[in-house]
Every structure is written in structure tokens, then in C-alpha cells.
Image 1: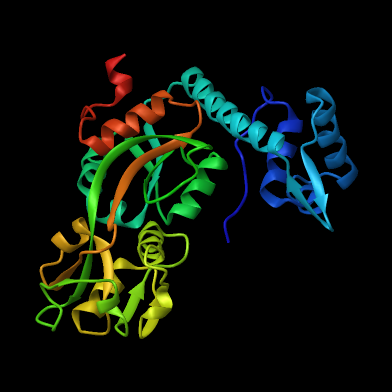
Image 2: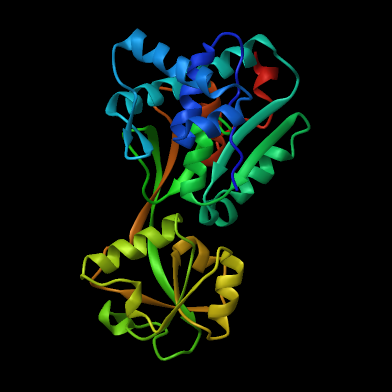
Length: 306
């Protein structure tokens, strides 16, 4: 379970903290428990914001509450406000430690930028808070201000986040080396009946495959069986011994010479790697992360350059 917390100081109105907590939980009682305050106080804080902006932020749909379009707008900009305040505090509390907080999806973290992260950590004063997880969880971490940016494969809410394209990469099928489909060019329907090993819901690679199936009015049900495994290492090990087929980015295939591969000719099988960060919040931290993943970050701490 993902824990829920924001970084706060006296600069931010406490009502905003309450508001963002309600956006996350969609439950006044849970918010009161998380923030150690009474439920009437939670209600009072939300009503105070609604009075200030003269807009309804939450409405009831039966017994459940849901965000209005005005709550979505306020959430987007207050998350940016939290991020900017962190930058101010970092600038006012300069230390010798050069710390980067960021995340990456599993393909990118394990196969694409691994060497760049290792190079950054060779420097004595450099430290990292680096999370490798799926797209869904990383975007939640961004909203909760646990990380400053995330390098994400696949789809995300572009109304909520700004982004910079890192690169585009082919999405390929993998199979046991020497099998009857190794090296073949196939159609989507040719794959019907094969056992599939796929990542969990919320992962970028799964989303790309599901969209490719949907283009042909098909679903993952067309495969003989579907096993869900979150580890790329485990998936490639199983494919290598013939337990099923899977789909990965080209970077994964290039790192494993023991895998066979096939091409699907009638589906859009490619994806983007984007650096994603809160809307209107391209901070110094984001720029530093961008340089790191591009392999352009200076070897010495940025503090030593100032």
C-alpha cells in the first residue's frame, strides 16, 4: 500500500493540505485520520476554500464524494505550489549534499539509465532517492511530492503534468530462442492461443499492448493463458525456457541475447519515454534530473559550481 504524505511548512495554508488529502482519499473521515484532526475541521477547511474561490470543490454522488472540475484545477496548481516551495527551502538551506529525487518505470530504470545513475552516485557528495515502479504509482508519487520528476514509458495525464520527450523506442515481441515464431513477422491474430506473460495493470508496457489489441477489437483474452508478473527478470527467464511469450521495449531485448523475438506488423507497437513533472513546475531539480538521464550532468556537485 502506498503511504500518503506531503512535505509542508508554514508557508502553505493548512487548508490546502486538507484539500489535497481529500483529493487523494475522497473521504473526509480518512482525511481526518491521516491529518490527526476532527472531521468537522476537515469540512470547515474545505468550506473555507470553497468560500474563498466561490466554487464547489467536492460533490456527493450517492454516499461517495467526487471532485468537481474546479477541484481538479486547484489540485493541479497547488501540487506545483508544493513543489516550488520545496525548491525555495532547498535554496535557503544549502548543504554539501547534492540530492536528486526521481523515479523511473521498470524498463527505463533497469535497462536504459542504469549506467547514468551509477555514474552520478560515484561522486562523494551526490545522493539519490530513486524509485523504480510502474507508471500509475510514479504519477501518484509526483502528486504527493515524494519525487520531483519521473521518467515514464507509456501514457499519463498530460493535462495534469508537463513533460519532455526523452526518446521513442520500438516495442517488440519476445519468445523462446529457436521456437516456431522466432524471427517471424506476424499479425496480431497469429498470436491467438499463445500463453502470454505480462506486467501488472498500471504498467506502461501493458497499456501499449492492450491498446494494440483494441485496435483490432481484441483483448488479452485472445491468448491461451495470461500470467501477470511485475519483474522483468522473471518474465524474461520464463520466456527463455518456453513458458510463454511477452512484449518488451527494444532495450530489454538488447540486454538479453538468450531471447528470441518476433515482429507484429499490423499494430502500433512503439512507445515514448518522457520525463514527467508537475504542471508549471520546471524547477532546477527537474533540469538536473534531465541532465542526469541524458548523460550530461557534470561529474562535480552543482553546489561546487556556484
